[in-house]
Image 1 (tube, rainbow, N blue to C red):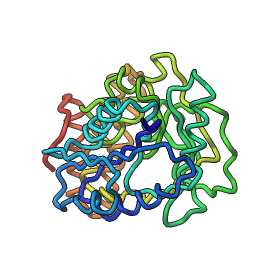
Image 2: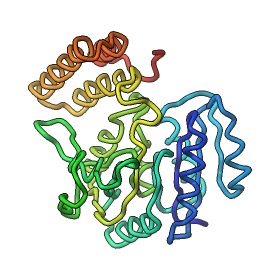
Image 3: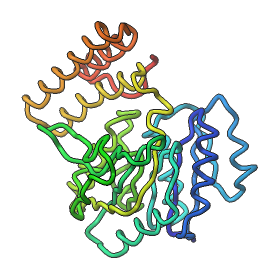
Image 4: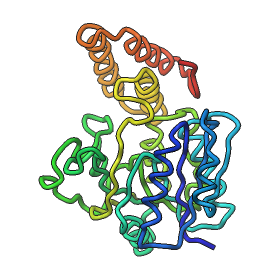
Length: 293
């Protein structure tokens, strides 16, 4: 029985998934099994099994999103009896000692439910994308975002939340909590799960010397309608679900409205602006889950 299940969700990202698996094959920690969940991709994922026969390939009959895809993987991991689940984006490259350091942190501290770590840009490895999570005026934000790695001080042992791009968590805890809230489909679900982990009495650790590199926004694009819709809709859902103060919700509305104006006036992108506006409408009316965009 393996100690760790590495869960990758694949949706039309076959080459990224193959590259990520190649990176994982170099891990110094060897006691793991990879579970790839294909979310009904247009591209046949059989090449994954052909190249990596030890990988557990699960095929969802529909696109269940980041949340549903990972929940499929978590259920399989629990069935396999692994101690920990490493939720990992398929568009990443992993340092050889990353998993070893993450496992060591959870092994040494029973009070930790999950651990996060630095995530740097794939195309510019001297820049952080994530160096821990915190709340700025009530809204989630990334420590170190777009800052040079050399200028970022290591955080204390704990962080407010992890990013769904990469974190290691106790399988039993993920099962107990029901995994990700599938109302989100994708985006903001990681902050939600972090809050539920902490509410259950566990802490979230931060391991500053375990590193991966992320091909940021490869699957959705920087200003894609999909990303804008789900991110802005889901933040409203999150703020309401956890009873955040009215001024925090108002702040998000103001940020979103300014973004809509920028998309229209600066970027001349009415399609993206409408997707964001539609997300706000659906978030305000609790219209959740997967949407056709």
